[in-house]
Image: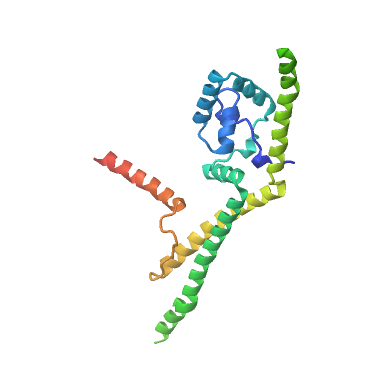
Length: 125
Length: 98
């Protein structure tokens, strides 16, 4: 399976050490500081999360440069896709319906009032 | 005696647990490559359509004063964001002048 948008990466661009925490933050949409604090707290209390961090740092790939987008909305969109793709599909349908409705209102405005025809009639008078 | 319990737990139990959840996770993630490219297309398409519709509405409104673009949600985050930036810029300018 090859799904570049929904894979967990190491986000080396926003990294502090290996980029595991920033990668998880980028994947889930949770602010990286909370994940880092959680990791530090878990490491102090249990110890093994540090090992897990290093293993993930070795195993995970770096985020490919073409997946970085200038628009933060796009990142947000993909985070929502990862959480629930069905909800995203419903949202897209709602957006399309919204555009359809607006287009219909423009169309009905031109059909019912027909401003060009009335101006032509005005000119002929 | 304790080693007899501890070693099998670490050698067999732990990888079993991890692999069990890895397979669970792999089967749960049902989004495929096709779905992903479809979602990517839909995202850009919806965005473009929305922007075009905005342009068309603005053109019609500038030609005909009595046309009011109907909005179901009057304050959408998408539309509010540029306005907020504009307000910030205006506030900055005001601060410079005074």
